[in-house]
Amino acid sequence: MPPGVNCIYCGGSTSGVRRGEHVIPEALGGTQTLRCVCRSCNTAFSVLDKELCSRSPLSIVVQQELGTKTGMHWDYNEEYDIALEARILRGFLAPVLWPQLVLLGPTTLFLFDQEEAESVGLDDYANAFHNLVHRSTEQWLSRRKGIIWERIRRQPDRGRFPPRFFSRHEYADWKRGMTFICRYLDPIEREQIVHAVRRWEPDITRSTTATSLGVLDPETLLSYQQDLILRALVKIGLNLLAYALSPTDVNSTTFPIATKYARWGTAGTPNLQNSGFVTGGTLSESHCPTDAHKFELVYSNQLWRLVAVFFGGRIGTCVHFPGPQITDYVRYEIVAPVKSKDWTVYKSKLHLAPRAIRTLWDDLSVMIPSMPIRHRGSRKRVEQRRRGK
Ligand SMILES: [Zn+2]
Image (cartoon, rainbow, N blue to C red; front, side):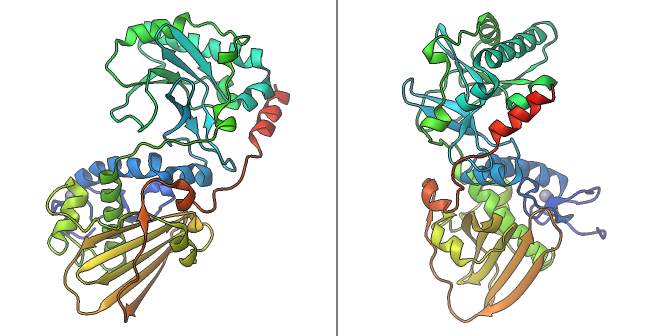
C-alpha cells in the first residue's frame, strides 16, 4: 500500500495492513482483498460477515456449495416446541439434526438423525456418542477444556431454547474425537448443565430417544439480525466500488453515510427500503454463471443499488445506499468466480432508471428457487468409513 492511503471506512491509518479486507467475504469463496481498510474496521466487519454467511438464508447455500460447517440452523420440534441444532448438507432439501442432548428440566433427550444412526446401528451410535460426551465432560471438570459455551442472545421466532449439548461432527468424524458446544439462553450455572449431561445414559429403547426431525418434518428456522445483514451488504457494495473504481473515489468523505453505516451501524439512514433478499425472478434474470457470484452496481437518483447474486443464482440480495452526485446513470457488472481471482468488471451507461426489485426476508421457497431435492451421500459415506475400520 502506498503511504498516505487512509481507511476508506474511518479515514484511519492503514499502515501495517497486510492481508486486507475481503471484497466479498472469504466465507463466500471471496479471494480479492482491499488493503485500504484498516485493521480495526476489518475486525469490526467480521461480525457482519458472520451474520451474513453463517446465520442468514445465504448460509444455507454456503453450506451446501462449500461444504462448510459454520452455519447456524435450527430445526423445529413441534412435540416439545423446541428449536434444535440442525445442519444443511449438499443435496439435502431438509435440515438434518446434529446429534445432541437437550436438557428439558429433569429430562435429557437424545436427538439425532435417524438415517445416519440406523446406518451405523442405533446401539453403536448411541454408545459412541455417550463415550464422547463422557470424555468431554470429564475434560471440562478436570481441565476446563472440551466444551465451548455459546450463549444465544436472540431466540428463533418459534421454539423454546433450553440448553443443548451438541457437536458439529458427523459419525464419520467421531473417531478423531470432538469438541462439544453447549448452547444456552440464560446464564445458567454451567456446572449444573455439565452434571446433567454427565449423568445421561443412552436408552435407545425409549421412543423419544430416536427421532428424525430433519427428514420427517423439514423446516428450517433462521435467526439473524436484519440490521447486521444490511450493513454487511452495504459493505460489500462499497468494497466492490473501491475495487472497481479506486480507494480515492470511495471513502468516508465521498460516501460518508454509507461508510459510517457499514462501520458503526449509525449516522444517517441509507435507503434501506426494498433491501434484503431478492426473489426467484430477479435471480433467474441475472444470468449469473454457474460457480460464480455476480454483482450489479447501478447509480441513479443519488443512490447506488447493489444486486448481488450468489452461487450461480441460487440466492441473491439487494441493497441501496447514498453516494456522490453523478450526472449519468452508471452501471457496473462484476462477475466473481467462487474461490478465484479471475474477476471481470464491465462498466456501462444506463439510459433508463433501473427497474424495481422485489425483496423479502423470510420466505425460503421464493428466495431459493433451486434448492436441490433430497439427499444422496451421507449414508454411503458412513458405510465406507466403517469398512475401513
Ligand atoms: Zn478503518
